[in-house]
Length: 262
Image (cartoon, rainbow, N blue to C red; front, side, top):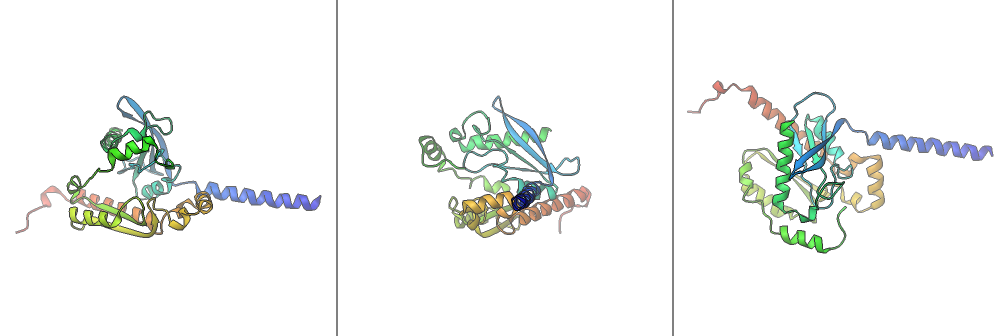
């Protein structure tokens, strides 16, 4: 009986330790606020992630989801990125896609213009204050409606704006070589930065981790920041810090000091 009790005590200590590790690894240096974004007479439930300290206003990163029925946190996947952005002094905004988490509508009925309008409404709001399996009929409608979407005509409007193009070496959703070529052609100059992650998948997770459901689950529980490709979170934070430094320097230059070179 003493041996059994000793074993049970050891197991209890180990379980408590593992539980504490999970809680610690999933505690992030940021503040989250629930928000409701008005869109077409409806409200989309969202999350505004803020730096842990400070009253703001903060510069903002708006998350526009990729494919699939994604909720505001992407099942907590976004939180390590939100933390990296918060450490750089940025807030993050994300929301449930239509039909996800109680949001009205169905994201499979959306066009890319609908998605863009949603993002515009989200930006206006803040200024004022697992993938379906198989090719279902609804998914085919979505693909057929959007497979020819092309943002090339809109990219030149970003010339001079700092842009970080993130490319994964094992991205089965995006032709990364073609994408990089297009961005370098349409956004020439130093404002465009390109970051390559050779071992990453489309979601910027290490391929070896994503390919193993067990490893993916354990990593998400015990070391969620390690889900991402090596250097990704640091690169995101460094990019936003640089953007913020440039913006502050620009504001610090009096308008009368700016002249034309002879």
